[in-house]
Every structure is written in C-alpha cells, then in structure tokens.
Length: 70
Image (tube, rainbow, N blue to C red; front, side, top):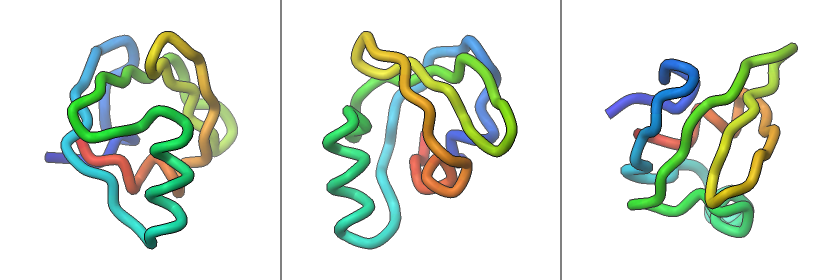
C-alpha cells in the first residue's frame, strides 16, 4: 500500500483506503475516490495531480493525493 502520489502515470490502480479527517474523506468520496474504485494518474503539474477516476479527469492537490492509498 502506498499513497497515490507515488503511482506511475498511466497505470490503473485500485484504491485501498482513504485517510484523513471525516470531512476530507467525504469530499474525496464525492469526487469519486472510493475504496475498491480504480484511479490512474494522468500528469503531475505544479503541486497538482491530474487523475482519471470514474470516467472523469480531476485535478487534486498533492496533499489530498497523499491521503488516497493504493
């Protein structure tokens, strides 16, 4: 298990768990980051991580990406 920020771009990964405070977990779940779901990194740019999750492309900060464990 490792944080999403350490994943290789383009590789599909399965989310194992979401860390952080309850409000952070709820925010990430609302965006589509749920345990058992698939996520892949598209690019890392200027402190943001662009990911594909549930057929959507989303940019999140590295601090949030660190809380997504794959």
